[in-house]
Length: 147
Ligand code: RTP
Ligand code: MG
Image (cartoon, rainbow, N blue to C red; front, side, top):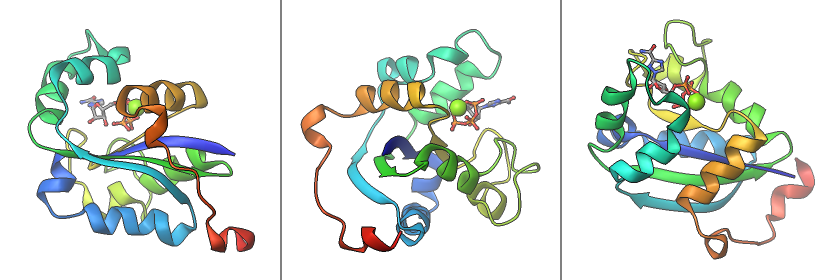
């Protein structure tokens, strides 16, 4: 069973889209195991986006994700990393498939509403940045037998 790190970025929080975005993952049947409404510090931003340090979009990216609170989450399910990346859509809203979150709500690459881990390694690393082990809750999801 996979886990992934998903985060509604400051634009999604400011636009009042937390509920809409979380609702999509709930309706898909995925299991929420952790959530936190928090402010990203520059130190957390640097760890989270370490792979992008040095790229031209890195300074504005850090300024953006630290500008306002985010809604950080861990979701669990079979193939949850690939499924949620597909539901989120491509980085650039112009290339995101219709019906994806970024296609439906985002306009710019820089303000694309949500982050999703892109691999099992990224998920483990990112979950460790944002959550302590005891914050990942273990419980029985009663609809799980149908999904
Ligand atoms: P994320 O990590 O936020 O889920 O997005 P992603 O995998 O689709 O995209 P990634 O390549 O990891 O880039 C991280 C974020 O940096 C901004 N970006 N801007 N101007 C650009 O060319 C550019 N490329 C990336 C986006 O906000 C992207 O989500
Ligand atoms: Mg990424």
